[in-house]
Amino acid sequence: MNKTNAQPGDLVEISLVKNNYKGILLESPEGEKGIVLLKLASGYNLGFHKKDILSVDLIKKAEGKKEGKLEAKKQKDKPNIAMIMTGGTIANKYDPKTGAVSPLTSSEELFQFYPELFGLVNVVKIETPFLKASEDMDSKDWKKIASLTAKFLNDSNISGIIITHGTDTLHYTAAALSFFLGEVNKPVVLTYSQRSSDRPSSDADLNLRCSALAAISDITEVMLVGHASTNDDFCYAMPGTKVRKLHSSRRDAFKVVNANPFARIYPDRIELVAAHRTNKNKKFKADIKFEEKIALVKVYPGQDPDILDYYRRKGYKGIVIEATGLGHVPALTSRKSWISSIKRIISKGISVCITTQCIFGRVNPYVYSNLRALNKTGAVFLEDMLAETAFVKLGWVLGHKEWARNKEEVRKKMLENISGEFSDRLQG
Image 1 (tube, helix red, strand yellow):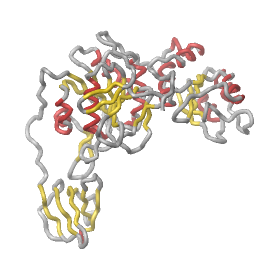
Image 2 (cartoon, rainbow, N blue to C red):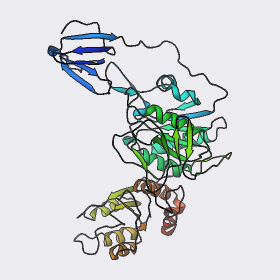
Image 3 (cartoon, rainbow, N blue to C red):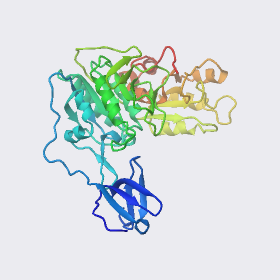
């Protein structure tokens, strides 16, 4: 390989015998100094053996770090919003030397990476309670986010709140905030990105711009805002209790299930789709009680009901069973019937709720004899509630001791439509 003045972070062209490749030169992995790494415009990395490279030609030097404090000027004609950054791809920056990403650590960096956001609103307050991958989050993190959000909901200088979050468990957090916050008095917008900001296919910019419009709208709901399709045309504003991640990598990963989005949000306007709350000008208090001793159990063919007794022995207070079809578990003719086990753990004070593994539709305890047998155990059939939402709601309900001590009060609360978790008419 010919000598080159190129350094990690520079835009270069690598020439091989048959092909040439353009991209950002990366640092070689530790212990693999014979390898040259290149990040392509597609966002993918390629590795080359130095012995196979004819030349590395410098196209453009990497931009040096800007000196001084980068600030977005506040403008009186723009509404003010607050942001809560919790981690995930959307809260990370690309390091051109290593090809890896690391967390954004200041508002200045946020301004640098997402300038279009600040053309729509003044981001006057930014809080970073923690920076975590969403798969590492739990109910304590939900409580922290809810408490910070409540503070901003009571700040008369703030029009709305944007919460950035990783995608994997974002729908759990959306459900948790829906119950913890209840009838909010300002828009509470959760958003994400599937692809980092350095990639041409990143969804971060459009999601944030649409989130800004949602945050200054009159949709006073807890909502999730993200790409409506794989294109960069518009986003959906989706109810926090009716949304699920349905794709592991696509930009339109989240979809509303059994309901409609609140709105379509374009970069310059909002088109309302469904009814929404418009609560204004009231003092707000979060309700963040939560019982952690709850479980979500997925039923599969031939599953031993001993799993239920495991949770009983561990002191669990509630179990959501993600059943098949209309709410089926192994029952009347199964070698491993669940009916007696469910009846037994309910008699020991454990609340048991039934949802369906199906994406669309609802459970129904009256269609088949085995469903009627399950219903007689005292298990609560949760209509069209999503399993993840049911898991969060059960923890929230059981966190209130005044409800938890009364089995019928738990049933009543689980069947009450508190945050739009039930749909009268199913969509989709």
